[in-house]
Length: 83
Image (cartoon, rainbow, N blue to C red; front, top):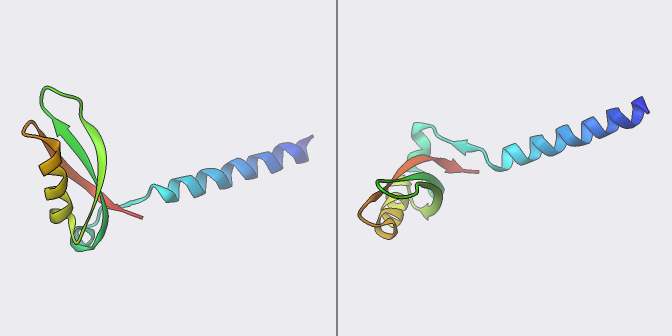
């Protein structure tokens, strides 16, 4: 029984490690200038805020794409580069 619980614990731990690395964000200053999928918290006044991602040559380009589609009462705040 102890062996079974130990194996189950290892499996759960490995799964959690894999899933957390899949959602890792690089929020360093250098990551803002890199191409890829950038994650943003889209803050909205008088509405529901949400987390969205956009591809871009850099964070500024990705932010502009989201800002154009988010509307006048929302603004994307950069969180990091995905991956």
